[in-house]
Length: 357
Image 1 (cartoon, rainbow, N blue to C red):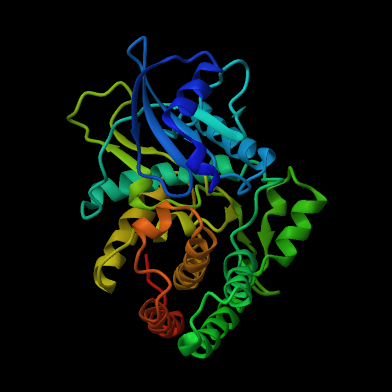
Image 2: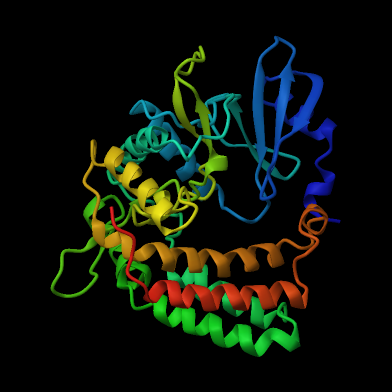
């Protein structure tokens, strides 16, 4: 039985009661595959969100670094939604589960075809990165070719997750993609890991040379998974205690990387559309912080790493009953043939001129 199968409504309510929060019995499961997240009505009428972390994914130290980053952002008046401090702690344990409790925040998906909205988001992303650059993570990993690409690929192959009729083609194209990504030294991780180990509290030590003759691209703490689903938008004409604009949620994937990682997942459409969207994001970003245009060449390599990592993410969690239910198409030969085609397209995309902003 998977660990989450023992997380019954009674266990959720008992966990909250253990930190002094008493539910009235009403729970609503929120959309989350990685963790289990519930909106809980409390007896006093308040609404909170309880997150139960996937066992063995993050250590307590890594989760606490996420919480500390959220707290720094909120102190800097960046609209991030972090956990509540209950009984002097943000991270709690009950019946073998690590969990946190956050205030419930309403909102809707941002309208990313509105350039003013993108510019607004860009301003706050710059503020997130300013806070992120102030110090380095000690325990949380970096976003690099080793953790997202090589480790994911090796796990899939060693556990025979790719069907034999597609394995040779996927093995070849994924290796070609990783080799091309590795030409971007800021994604190889070796120098950055060494620097962070030598002096974990120095923002200067999250920098990696792109080549010997250039200034390093800066790597620092990021949101890490800044797609539209992790931004709650409150329109300016809607009264809200939290204020209008974007509110950033779910820093569960916060890690060290280049700034553009928090921008590229907000782009969609054809090249001209993505160029306009990127221009609006960068316009907002540069009102608060310079943006290094060299990072635009990292968009397609980062997209390719995410493709490889996503397949391994699904395969590693297949024993969790919610995954076969919600991803029934995963694992078939058709799925993997589609991955081969997408990686072939990404090889071409990585050779093209990057977007401009």
